[in-house]
Amino acid sequence: MLEIKDLHVSVGGKEILKGLNLSIGAGEVHAIMGPNGSGKSTLSYTLASRAGYEVTGGSITYKGEDLTALPTDARAAKGIFLAMQYPVEIPGVTTINFLKTALNAQRRARGESDLDAVSVLRLVRGKAATLKVPEEMLRRALNVGFSGGEKKRLEILQMALFEPSLAILDETDSGLDIDALKLVADGVNALRAPDRAMLVITHYQRLLNYIVPDRVHVLSAGRIIKDGGKELAQELEAKGYEQIIKDAA
Amino acid sequence: MNAVSPLEIFRAQGVPHRRVEDWKYSDLRSVIDAETFEHPYGVVMVVKTPSAQIETVINDELPDWASSAVQSLGVGGAMDAAAKAFAPNIAAIRVPGGLQIADPLHIEFHAEGQGQIILRLETGASLTLIETHHADSEGLRNLSLSIILEDDAKLTHVRREHFSKTSVTVETMGVQVAKSAEYRAHFTSLGAKLSRTELSVLLAGEGADVDISSVSVLGDGAHSDVTTRIDHRMGHTQSTQLFKAVAGGKSRAVYQGKITVSEGADVSDSRQTAKGLLLGPRAEIDLKPELEIFADDVKCAHGAAIGDLDVESLFYLRSRGIPEPEARTLLIRGFLEEAVEGIVREDIRAETWQLVEQGLARATEPTP
Image 1 (cartoon, rainbow over the protein chains, first blue to last red):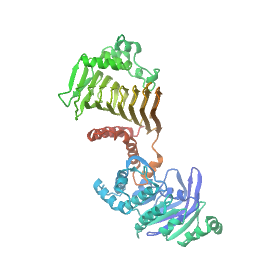
Image 2: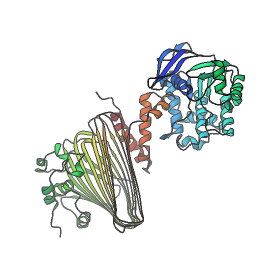
Image 3: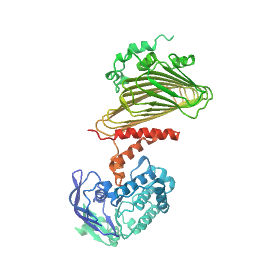
Image 4: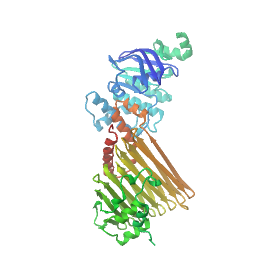
């Protein structure tokens, strides 16, 4: 599904990712853990092609296609979804209108026809109920005045709606209390599928108690320095990043 | 007592230019010359009235009830003086006391020329006025609009200006709002070669309530200046103003908003927000809020900000599959939303959005 080889990425002329390798197969859930400044968010923004994140070396291949040449919106249409750490507040654009615009833009890019407002609302309603996203929230301006938990639930609702092949969850646990975390994790787990890969990026092991990964990778100073199964997350929690980084050196 | 006539005022002041502080951003003298006034001709005004009970007179002189109204408002500067001095046709519209009209009264303006309109709503009357400026003017269109709202009267004033690259449009409006009367204005301007909408509102009685929202959506070659003066002459009055401008291509949007709270006008509440969105390096937006407070126990809040489209928001929308041009349009519409959504009537709101969309199509056009 996703093949990253010797990836080098610079932000503002400073190299942040320094030869990152990662391979994720269909149906797999991988976790990337790392301390602050290790390059976690740089990786997620690079996968979504954010302006200012410059790939200076290596390759990113998604379903056999070179991803680096594709702009942000084309990547989304091809099934890559990034659940953001800080979803943006957009005044004057209602959540439901945003969802409809995005869904139809992706459909159009794939050569499918637009869905009308009624069909979109029906589709959204079905998914919103399980994520406890009330209808009233859909009529409010996108993310404006939403609590941290509401914003993250809306990210997962989008994931359920867009049905991506590759979902990247960037620090989805940040700012969530335990109840909100469980709700979000349940939502993510419900979307696990044999044809869908997930990359869960997190600082803390806590989230991985609820979204149990197949593989765990430790990111430090722009490289993966250790790989393992789900038990690696526990080891990290017990020993701390410093010790693991020292051991790997 | 009325020693100085409009003609004398205009002769003394001449065509305003950029060295007149108030016209700093709109140099009228660079686009028209004094000769324009030598042979004054009338603008084409089409008045469509929804009710026979509304008194509508189009004549070359003012009816008695109108001249006292015009006198009490005074002259609003050189261009207002010119319109009053030269306009061959005057429309005088009177809504009798207590008459509440649901359907809008339309005034449509065509071609160039001068015109004067007086609208008086008597005690407890209510009306929606829709003023439409068509793009078929080749020169100066100069208008004076006087509005008198007596006690408890309610006016919704919608003004729409289509883009004309050949027109120089100046409209000076004086509005007097009496006790417990309401004035709601919704202006939409796509600009002109030079467009100046000048609105002076006098809150003359307790409980006077004024709400103004204004949207300027400018594409290449457009200029639009909205200048407001809100005078809280009496206490227990309130006013809100929301100005939004989107400027693309080589264009210029101007907002000058002055609020005066007169001495003794205690317990007044005045709010003003002005925001500009620049879509290109050759667009310019000038915002000039001004506050003058001579009273105590007054609430005044004002804010002004100019920016580009937010890159974080653009990235967010694009990461959801929305292509950049569509994402930009979505954000621009979102920016304007609060200024359009205040229009209560759904049909008028929808028509306003249509005009805004026409403006956006020009404003977001790539320019060489």
